Length: 249
Ligand code: OAD
Image 1 (cartoon, protein in one colour):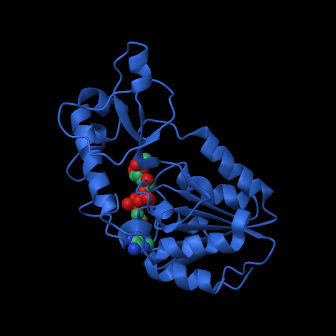
Image 2 (cartoon, helix red, strand yellow; image 1 turned 45 degrees about the vertical axis):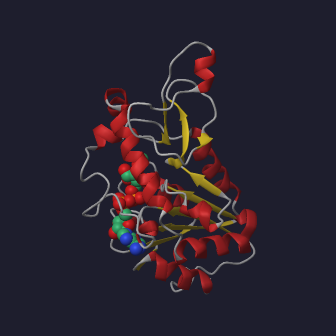
């Protein structure tokens, strides 16, 4: 067992990181389950499900437009920057899987990034398989954006946020990329930060890593639902803990 104070990274070590809403909390983006979180004023069914979008697409676009506005006023914090610095050090021995859709890891400079729940600033067709496009617009009111590819075929299809909603599958290519990364590691460290461990399949990633012999770390403001699955738990805000932990790693 390595020294519990340090990740003990050497030239053989690969690091898989999983982040959740807590990592963006110090940037000013509310977490999901905290008081004042996103779901408080709207039900999940209304704003984060295919059925909700079918019933009231204008409400859904207003909700995500407000989230776009909010995210654009926020900046990456020292936790995001510490992960980018670790990637610079490890190169292809680093992969960051995030449940966050706020784009802050990308804005901090992270490149080996898998956004398993989508991205707030990507828009895609609700009908066809056209590639999602970068979109920072806010869509309010009755003139909701429509798919140009479908329009060429005479079909009127609404565009929608490129977010994984409840009842939808994660992109299997993302999960495969994470699996391949774990399989290729000579020695694997798994680090989860700012996530409640309540939403699957992300919550099960620690078990998949342990099945490959990984040493596992959790950095969180409080115990997560799956804390017991980790070898090490460092309790505290990720904006403080991650820079300190990764600097000495
Ligand atoms: P949650 O809101 O469920 O959990 C955030 C976790 O971060 C909690 O355990 C907090 O204690 C912790 N936390 C808060 N502030 C922190 C800080 N400054 N430093 C470290 N930890 C802190 O968010 P997620 O686990 O990311 O899915 O939620 C997972 C998914 O649930 C989300 O991606 C979203 C939601 O349904 C979809 O939208 C598909």
